[in-house]
Amino acid sequence: MIAVLNRFLALRLFRRILAGAPVCVVLMLPAFGQQPLQTLLVGVDHRTVTSLDGEWHYLVDQAPARDLYTDTGLINDHGYALNTHPNISSGKHNEEYDFATASTLKVPGDWNTQVPQLFNYEGVLWYQRDFDAEPKAGTRTFLHIGAANYRSHVWVNQKRVCDHEGGFTPFDCEVTAVLHPGSNFVVIAVDATRLVDGIPSVGYDWYNYGGLTRDVSLVTVPSAFIDDYDVHLAHGPVWQPGNTEVTGYVHVLDAPAGTAVTLDIPEAGVHAELKTDADGRAPFYVKGSKLTLWSPETPKLYRVALATGSGEQQDKLSDDIGFRDIRVDGTHILLNGKPVFLNGINVHAEAAIVGGRVDNDQEVATLFSYLKDLHANFARLCHYPHDERMTRTADRDGIMIWSEIPNWQHISFDKPEVYAKDLAVLREMIRRDRNKASVILWSVSNETSNNPTRTKFLSDLASQARQLDSTRLITSALNSEHIAGSTATLDDPLTNALDVVGVNEYIGWYTGVPEDADTLRWVLPEKPVIFSEFGAEAKYGNHGPVTQRWTEEQQADVYKHQLVMLAKVPQLRGITPWILMDFRSTTRNIPKLQDGYNRKGLLSEDGKKKETFFLLQKAYGDNSVGKP
Ligand code: GCU
Image (cartoon, rainbow, N blue to C red; front, side, top):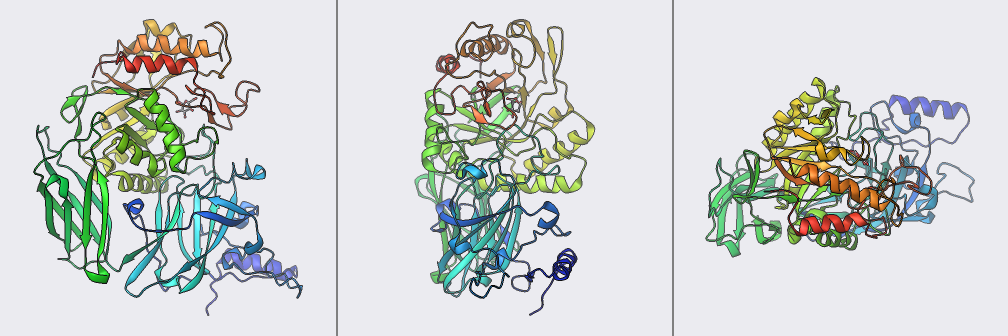
């Protein structure tokens, strides 16, 4: 067996030998002669999978950063990936850990809200669990991870299978070659350390919840299988009333050209027999006999069945897909050809009452119950892709979605490797959710400084998003407006790359007093505009005169003056005030008022409605905020 030690590890090993310390040789063998496949399987939540959710053993690895990573960026494992057990009686100390008898964490779930000692922990934590498998010849198995914040490194049966960076998008590691019948085990190191060159970078206004924060499962498929598909209403240069044409592609991985694929949408009278091209892609353009278009009023979803192969080698899956058209026309946003106004709100992926990352049906249902109560038809899932349940529920409940990659404020826009990371996260976000009718906007950033390097970086990213998905609108939340006297001007060149412009401003909270909004005039691009953030902090139950900050009355007063101002913006096509619910942030530390929470929510973190909730609920119910 060839022990492959990288330079860094060898040096460390040498030091330990000199010091007479026990030595554990880490085998950095490529799992099976080549790099295992890493991909993103679309529609996993519609496949029959083996869930690996539940209790995982864990240990905290507080080795200093210099010891954690090799100079090639691979994590050093102190033998933990081997999952061996100490031989207590022999006194040998090769393994000073034992997952089998270690404490456990619930997966999915951030570690911060499960173990008090881990509440502020932002380092490396090693997870381990056993699982049974009965791999069958002619099938392939992938380990599916819904999200792991922030970097993750995966071994199965002591073989390294994949690494991933990005805390909010799924990834799939092929484990076919390392599985054996019976008991297997997986070890995952998750590193929540913030990186200056990360996406996001280091200082952000939300809680850095670490861990396997979304579902983990095993997906078994035939040797050639459907890994990606795009099924959407044909989107021509102009809106076609009565359009029932459906187009897109089905991709079959590792299939020879000419592989047969079938597409069925029974309720729309669609059956198509397709063939893959040399790249495994089977494009299609079919005309349905009838199609009820998706909208908040009629969130109609169709069962779409895809199949390829036959017998044991057949792969088939279905999805629930809505068909709708979204486009801009001058300063209007048209949904299925009709102007629409977006009564929205910002939503962080934080669970009401219990706190922590949202990772299950109940927590998602609670957030959507608040949206429904608010009479919202729109939500900005800030500032990162949320659990897939959020966009699935939005599809079913008829809530339109702004989905965003975590380019929050200061990103290393000058570094090509950061652009590459960004592109990877953008691809993962679009690939996972492109078949969700509720998603109408892809956002490339939030509040970044207006300078040429950033503008080129984000403009390039916006054009990549369009190439990946020409059917949706591209946006970004900007706070680069400048206010002189009673005029606020947004003339940021990034707006040239956007279909819809997001504007963040905090008049009456961070700048000036609420009354300033009454007389403020906005100079904005001739495009649809969404005021994507405004608001004020208030502690639930804290009451006083409207002039007293941190009271519910003052927060409501800010909204009153904001709505007066916004009603005068001719190209206003939606608002997402900041924010649905108070949320944890390490930058919010005023005792008795914040206590570690950003309090701009319309609800407290335990779901109690502040006065402003009712103010906005009425405005949305009356449709009085703006005109479509
Ligand atoms: C910023 C930012 C948010 C932040 C908010 C605030 O605009 O986009 O992430 O939480 O303002 O300061 O409360």
